[in-house]
Length: 270
Image (cartoon, rainbow, N blue to C red; front, side, top):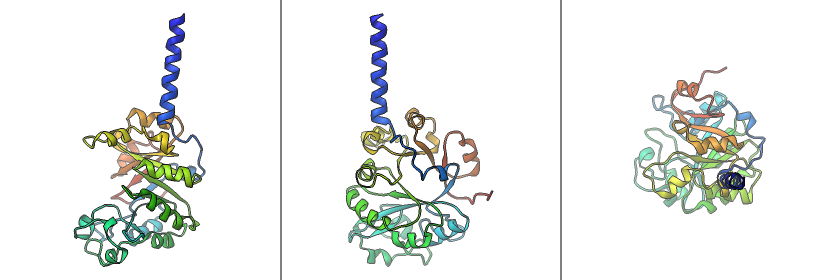
């Protein structure tokens, strides 16, 4: 009998340890129910064939016209301005060497997105355009400057009247929001990282949830079966999937995710 109690006690301790390290916040955030079943336009409703670049005002305008929530990415420039751009490097979208964080806003304004007349927008310009018409999902792209980015972006977002959620691959961003703006809905971005180093592998297991305590988990949809993702969802985290490329992929994963981040197609309106 004593061995049974020892076994049950050990299992209970293991369970409590798993909940502590991997568990979400446990709250039911009011910004999540409106997004249940929603499809979120990844970097706006962009289209290469139509000359509408990702993370451009045109892509955001097109998403609004289709009534779609929008996912955007933000960086902090070297002169302390928040801009909407995905990559850390400028080469792919602007055809020049350099990193966003190393440039001033004026320098970035001299560039164009691909072969269009579109500039890299600021966060304020994006917010002025969206103006609460659709929800925003804002990804914080931060490495060494996460505190400065969080403070600066929050100063702008705190004046915004529309609905928004924040997410990041970096748990320290979520920790900042947990400590300073706990009412804002926050999500942990992750995937089953391979050959990315130990810390990235650990982040992919959602181990750092004990710091971040996310309200939702945004996980790469191909990795839907990962046990710790399912464990977090079972504990109450809302489940976002990224990035769906075809409507059929969403149909295949409807039982695994609550919300779908997509690109490269226009959803059929209900």
